[in-house]
Image (tube, rainbow, N blue to C red; front, side, top):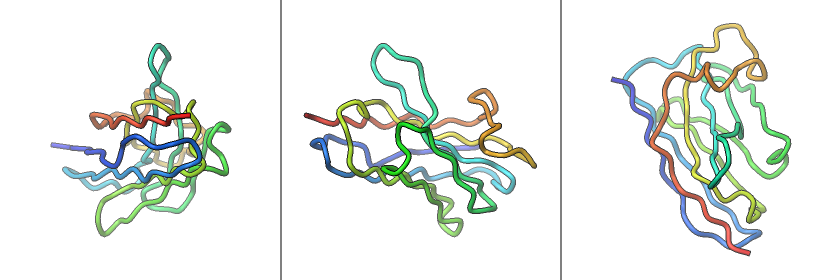
Length: 127
């Protein structure tokens, strides 16, 4: 059974940093893309960042480019999202997701292509 478990959310002041973790288990994630999505109150879920499991390609939403960094540790089966220079508009529930990418680029992956999802972790940025 595939499990994605997020951790690391919390309350932080604007300009601060948080590091989210996503521990993956239950299968081999070769040729899988690992993504972070977020959903703010009253808004639709949106893409944040993604990384290939087997390669080091990354892809970011314009709203977080230059502030967030996605990385992974294959030995620990864990994906991270380092969030710096946080803004109040970054407040949301953050979800980790995994989807088979094959030869597709991360940019070509749609939200529906991510088949496994975590339960989410709350990030609140105060002004």
